[in-house]
Every structure is written in structure tokens, then in C-alpha cells.
Length: 553
Image (cartoon, rainbow, N blue to C red; front, top):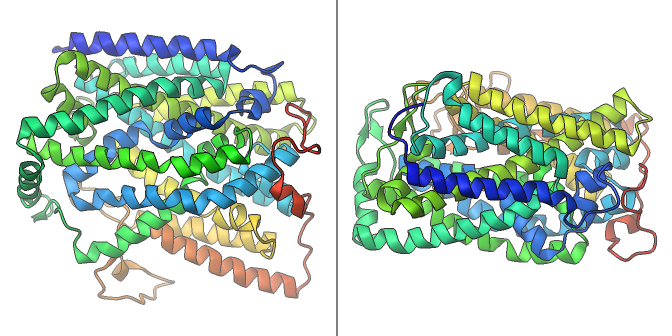
């Protein structure tokens, strides 16, 4: 550990952390069913969360510590490009409203716990379901690691900035506690804690947005300072760091990144877990109508990147890597500009904001492993209790696998891996989302499209350098059209416009899925058995033929 511990902030942070720990253990008895030894109960909270609980769970699930830390940090470093998160958060909910209703209904009818469960039932293909499950697992792991990045940024700001294993000890303690109450309480733990997290976040952000500008001379002065700071030449690239206005070569990237991110958001296992846990279709409708309120919060958070530039914030150097940690920008801003007691509340809000999504993500990944790998391939006759036990153990493995990212890999590299997660999960859209409306795609076509999208998407990401950090590969989400290569053919040679590779990979995915589907249908290859019916996609709570909760699958 280092000297310079911020004792007041640390004491308040610890007290609030202990409060949510108690709530996490108490949650096992909150709205409890007759048993937790079933994925319906442990992994989906009994499938009976109402509008308010779902609101806080989805908000806590989707607006993570990484969002609270990294969006303003990106704006601090690059300017306008960081605002891509705003349009994507706004358009995601109208896009997903109707598909989410259909997916909830068919899953409630058949007892599906994961998107791969649904794909297995829709197409009768264990192979396609396995592809969807593995994609979800791989995309979720670095996402959990990113929550650790946000939590460590807060710990580092409070003076816990050591090197080696001891430097990560507070993080390990926090995640051991998280692992224990998630193991005991399942999805009910993050659902209950999300109430505390959201209240703290709203208090902190509204205080920051009104208090900090008054202290720094108003928004006009803040934007002027930010424009001047961003216009300074970056020694590593020889170009300005960013600007308040998006440059022309980045406009296509901005649009495709926003649209691609919106399409991918509710394909992530943790987002779907909150959907599956809802009580009925009306709950989902109300939440999709109300969740854009969080987009307003996100916009306020993003502005803190400009506030940090105006305040002259310098990121803390990570003692483990020797490099400045840009994720500390907002915590340092709070610590510098707020009284110690309020900074402690702000740090706790960000830290708890890491625990809620990390818990839901680990549960969602555990559900995928249990239903679509363990039960499908390792123990077909597993009882509900055995499934629940396997999921609890898998949730522990997932959490500590994510911790390994932080211990053994440069945390900045784990942030780059989020780009891989987004590109990967986007390739499940045809099998999961489009199939809710049509079964025209053949299972073999979907597998072929998925494979092309996955491998080409990763290849494009691999080819992107980042001169600012010295990375030769996986350096960002901006691919120059000039670098777009199709078996050596460069259709946009000389074009400097940037594009999001996940969007390009999805277009290729759909194209291959269509072509292969036409071929295999012409060859009259069996399409696989569909266990769903048209009426399944419109079922709602109260229907007589709904599958009983916690029934044997």
C-alpha cells in the first residue's frame, strides 16, 4: 500500500460497502420462493420482479462503474467522440422494446433461462446454441473485468495504489465478499443493492453538475478551457488530442458505433437476465419507456470529462504499470473539488456501481454455462438442484476469472477487450433477435454467418493500432475504410473515413447467413425442430398455460 490514504473518504466508502454487503446476504429471504435450488429462483429471482425492481436492476445492470468512469474519461482524452454513448443509449430502448416482449413471452412459456436456451428450442440445434452460449461467456468476462477497473480507480484515488498482489488486496477482498453473497442470494442480491446504488449515483451526479460549474466559472468557461486543452498536440501522435466538434473522418464511426452498440446492448447475457426476471410484459413496456431517463444521467456524467479538463485534473499514475490511469479522472475530480465526506459518498456510489453489474454478469454467465454446456453436454439428466449448484460454482469461477484479468493483464488491455466483447455479442443478433420474427434463416446459415462475423470482426480489431499508447493491435474501435480488406481486395483504398468494425462484421454475418440459407434450402437440408408456436410469443402473466416457475426443465 502507499502512503497518503484518504481516511475520511475511506471510512465512508467502507461503511456504505458494509451496508450493501448486509443487504446482499439479507436478499436471500427477500421475495423468496420455496427454494433457491432452481435457476428460476437463484438465477432469475423467481421471475416475479415488478416495474420498480426491474427499473433499478436494469439501470444498475446497464449503467455500470465503467460507464461512470470511462465515458467522462474518454471525453477528457478525446472530446466529442465520447458522446457516442448518448445516442446509442437513447435509441436502444425503442429498438429493443418489441423483441424483448416476444423473447420474454416465449421464454416464460418454455422455461428458457438464457438466449441460448431460446435458440436451442427455436432451431433444434445444440451446435448453434453452443455458439451463442460461448459468445455470451467470452463477451461477458472482460465486461466484468471492466467493473474491476472502475472499482480500482476509486481505491487508487483513496490512496490504495500499491504494486503487485498486495496492491490488489482491497479489490480481492471486495470481490470475495461479492462472491459470497451472490452465491447465497443469487439475482436478488444485486436487485436489492441496486436501490442503494442508484440513489447514491443520482445524488452525486446532480450535486456535481450544479456545484462544480459554479465553482469553475460556469459552463462557458468550462467549454472554453476544454477546447483549449483538447487542441494541444499529443506528443505521441503529433496531432491534437481531440475537439469539441466531431471531425469529418470520425462521423461514420460515430454513427455506426452508436447503432452497433444499441443493437448489441440487449444481446448481452446480463441485460437479458433482467428481462427474463420480469413479472410480465407490462413491466418490460414500462421500463423501456422510462429507462431513457438514465440517458439523461449519462449525458450529465459525460460532461464531467470537460469539467475535469477545466479543473486541470491529472490522472493518478498506476503503481503497478507506471503509467497514468485515465480511469481515475472523475474520482480525482471529486476528491479535489468536493469536501472529504461527500467525496467518500461519491466514491462509494462508483464502487457499488461496479458491484451490481458484476454480480448480474456473473449470474448470467453462470446460467449460460449451466444450461447450455453443463446440462447439454456433460450431465443431461441434471436435476434443478444440481443445475443451481453448478451455476453457483460457475459464478465464483467467472468472478475470479475476471479478477485474473486485473492481476495478470494490463488493465488498459482489459478495457480494449470490451471492444472485442461488443463485436462478438453483436454477431448473435441474427440467431437471437431476428429469429423472434422469422424462422427463414437456416440453422447452418446462422452458424456460418456467426463464424464469419466473429473471425472477421476479431481480425479487424487486431489490425487497429493506437499510436497514443504504443499498441500495435486492439488499439481501438475506429477502423479506417482504407484498411478494410476482403481477401486482399481493398474496396475503399485511400479513404480515411473511420467505421466501427462490429457493424461491418454484422453486415458480413447477415450476408453469409442469407447465402448459405439459400444454398442449404435448395439442397433440402432439414431445418431442425422448432418447439415454439406463434402464440408463445404473445403470452403474458396470468395466462393459464404458462410454465410453472421452478418446474423441472
